[in-house]
Length: 153
Figure 1 (cartoon, one colour):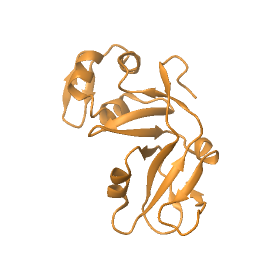
Figure 2 (cartoon, one colour):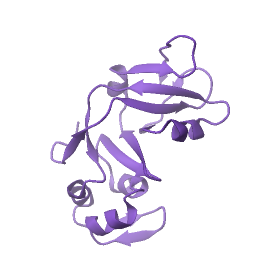
Figure 3 (tube, rainbow, N blue to C red):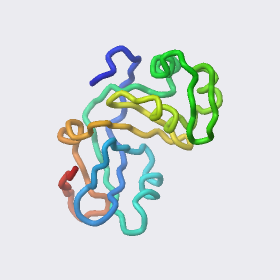
Figure 4 (cartoon, one colour):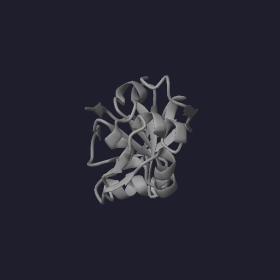
């Protein structure tokens, strides 16, 4: 983990991921897991599959933490590419964008594991997810039996 100097918090274990088509979980790098089943289901589309991923205990950088945002921005103004706004301080950014930190924080360069928010929904960002997923339990939602999916980069 490359965020030893950022404030961290321990996250819950259960996350949702959308599979884009039948078969393997298609991994994008970075990988985003959602705390919301309906959010993940929306990204899955009508033919996608939904997975519940139980990650091991993990400490991550939370992009709602003002000190973490200060460190990520290195004291520079924060540009949010989503709405093309510029915020002079971490406090100003969080006051305006606390429900949508995703795009601006990703543009700054996130550490390996971070919590980002979109529409108020908490999402787990994993830059290199393989190590975390190797230790995770993965369930195909709606399957008659628990199924371990193949992880394909």
